[in-house]
Length: 549
Image 1 (cartoon, rainbow, N blue to C red):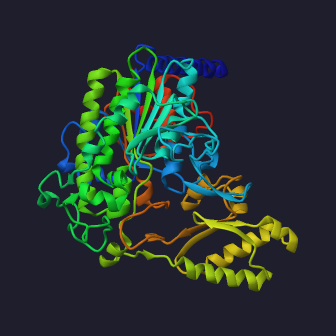
Image 2: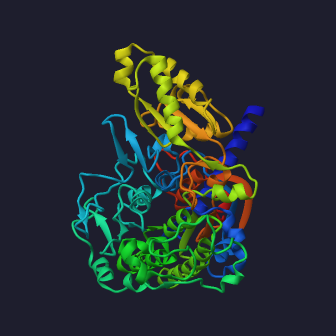
Image 3: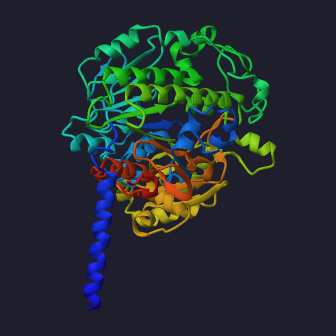
C-alpha cells in the first residue's frame, strides 16, 4: 500500500512539473527575439561602483525590472574571451566545448591555432585575411543552434561584435551570419564565406555610410570629470594611453591620433567602439527583420571596447568609468529600439561578461596589497637547466603557452621516458619556482575528481585532447603583463565574478545571492524557449529566473 502511495505521489509531482514546464514554454509566451549581450571584461562590481551615474533606462532597467544574479561566476580556468563567449552560449566549459584559449598549441599539427580561425574560409567585405573565420573549432552546439534546429531553420541567428571571436562563437555553427569590425584604413564590418558569398545590401549600406567615420572625434568625459569619484586620478603611472599623446589624460582628439594608432582601429579603445556595435546591431535588427514573426530569432551582441580600454587604462581609470557611463546610454538606446521594433514584452535579454579583470598590480602594491609581475625568462632558464640536468635533453618541451607545458612525445619515446613520471617530476620542479601557486599534471586532471577549490576550475578548463601536460597557477594578482593596464585569465574572484542579468519576456523580477555559474545561462534560455539544451550543456536551469503562470 505504501509503495502504491509513493508511486501515486510521484505521478502527481511529475504531472505538476510537466504542466509547469508546459506553462513556462507555451507558444504564446515564447519571445520573438532573444538578445544575448556580452560586455567584454566587465567585473560585477562595475554595476555597483558606477551605479550612481547610471540612468533608469540601461543597466538599472535590466536590474530593477528583470532578474539580477549577484553571485555569478566562471567555473573554469582560463577566464579569457574565446572560452568565455563559447561557454556562455554552449552552457558548458572548455573541458567539453574545446575552446581552451584564444590561441593554443595544437598537439596534432604542432602549431598554434586561433579559436575562431579557419584558413579554409575566405574574407567577405575586405581583401585582408581578417574574415577567414568560422566556429569549427568549437565542438558543441549553442542554444542558438538548438533554436535553429527547433524552428526548422526559420528562426534566424545573427552575431555582432568588434571582435571576430565575439561574433562567431556565440552565434554558433548554424548561424545565418556573424559580423565583426575590421579597422585599419577600411573601418567596415565584415564576415566570412562560412556564412555568405557577399555582404547583404543592408551591411553594404551601413559600410558606405559615414556612421563609423563620424566617431573619429574628441573623446572627453560624458559628465564633469570631477564627479567621477569612483575611479582614480586621471593622470597616473598605471595607464597606457595612445601613441602621439604624452599623457593618458582627457580629452583625446581621435582625428589627430588616428594616424599613429592604426586609423579606425583607435575606435576599438574608446567608448565609440561600443556605439558602433549598437549602431550595427540596430541595423541588423531592421535589415534582417528580427523578431517580426512567430519564430524566435537570436541576436548576439558583444561589446568589446570595454576590454580594449581595460587592457590599456586599467580597472581603476577614469577612462573605464566614463566607458561604463556611456555604455549605460548605449543599452538604453538599444532597449528602446527593441521596444519599438520588436515590442515591449515580446523579447528576452540577458547580459553578462566573458571575464573580469585584475586591478593593476603596481597600483595594488602602492596600497600594500600582495601583487606583482612574473619574470618568465628567469622561470624558463631554471626549467631549461632542470631538464638538461635531469634528462640530458632540452628538447622535451614542445610548447609553453597559456600557463601550460606541452611535452614532446617523440623525444620522450626516444629517451625511453615514462610520461607520468616526467609529468610528476615537472610538477615537483615548477612548484618550487617564485610566485607559483599551484601545479597539476594532465594525469591528475584525468584521474582525480576534484570537488572544490581552484582545482575544480582547472579541471573544468582541461580538455583531454587539447590541453597541455602541466597546468600552472600563479600567485594571486601576479601577472605576465606590462606595468600599465589590466588583464585577466585566472580563477580568482576578480576574474570569475561577472554580472548576469535577465530581462523581458518570461523573466521573473527579482534577484538572488545564490551562486550561479556562466554555464547556467544556455540551459535557462533553452528552458524558457522550450527547446533542446545545447548538446553537451552541463549547467543548470535557473528555474527561479523564469516566470511561471
